[in-house]
Image 1 (cartoon, rainbow, N blue to C red):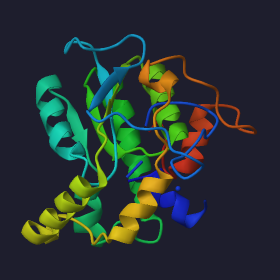
Image 2: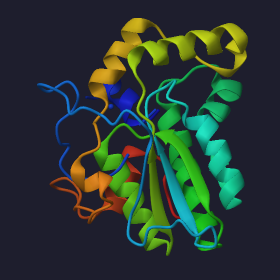
Image 3: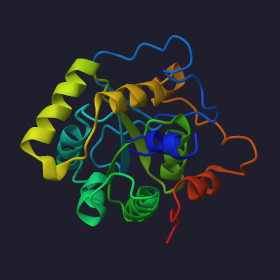
Image 4: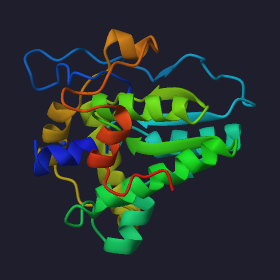
Length: 226
């Protein structure tokens, strides 16, 4: 998660791209998400496994992101970074008083260093917010890498069934999630727009921000280039 949970703390697993927040699923009739996984990339689109690529996993809990992320990491010989795999053993909870954003910032920093070393990376963050996705697309390009977005939509019934199954079979590998949580997250998720689905031009950052690096450093504390 990412921006999803930040909605709870100041407005906030969080993908594609746009400076304006754009419509969310909670503002009027939601854009209808695709019923099957959508795989898009920025220019250049990196389907060639030899091209250093930042792969952004987008979707809600229970969408199958981590399963797909593992497959892509194998295909691309890529480093996979999944915040939950760190938050659970370190803190035993999803947010831990904001520590998740600090952790995600450090993981992004590691990802950028790996890209510059010509190692592809799979960021298994969720990336519910468009600004998050735009920032990461920009940072990938600034590191000399391509960027690929993999969006996995999920129906609510399937999502709830997967969450329940995970909590029953592997409670030590997940967090408690209620149906009310799921409903709230589905409202907060910012559905990919046509520009994102087409892998179009990356917009500028929100007003009052000089660039995406500054926005990212504020959104993900500890997101530095070192």
